[in-house]
Image (cartoon, rainbow, N blue to C red; front, top):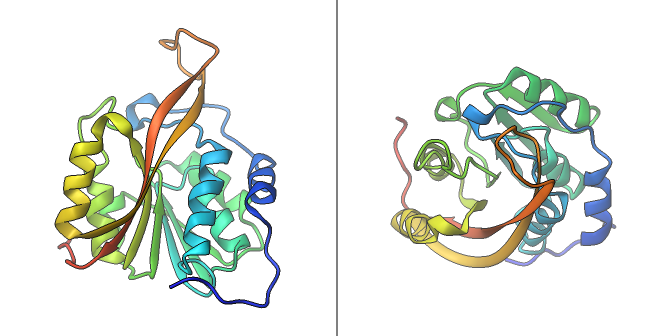
Length: 211
């Protein structure tokens, strides 16, 4: 269902600018596959969900929230309440600071422990570069707790990702995007590079079980 509103919200480009102004981590944990979420791609995901009527007045979860780009974006675009979750204390502290004054509740926990039902799940889970299928617990939790999911995945895993979302419901949106990844780890060879990724929108029809 598309949104119907009389309120004024920032456009996609303005939202991107707001996301760029947030505080970002000074360090990242490679074991957790932490990367800077590209503000351009984050704004695309949030704005797509907003245009589809899945943000304004809705309860939203940001799984693996990092510094809170998606949580902040959803709140700015009119979410009723946002639950932001990450297992890293440094990230949840940063998310709390970035979302201060907004209707955002931040939890430090493993994603599989999240057990609050929401209308919409937004997430940029690990791509599985360090641990194969590291995004699977996020997909399972999203399916268990949400009705609609918007997520970013490595394009190289497209077949696996499509199979997972098809098993739990219906994929209604896909978009190929390029994520700009700066050099944040010692093994990175270039100052920055573009990584091909996939934004997926899925309606949940089969609820998963808590693992």
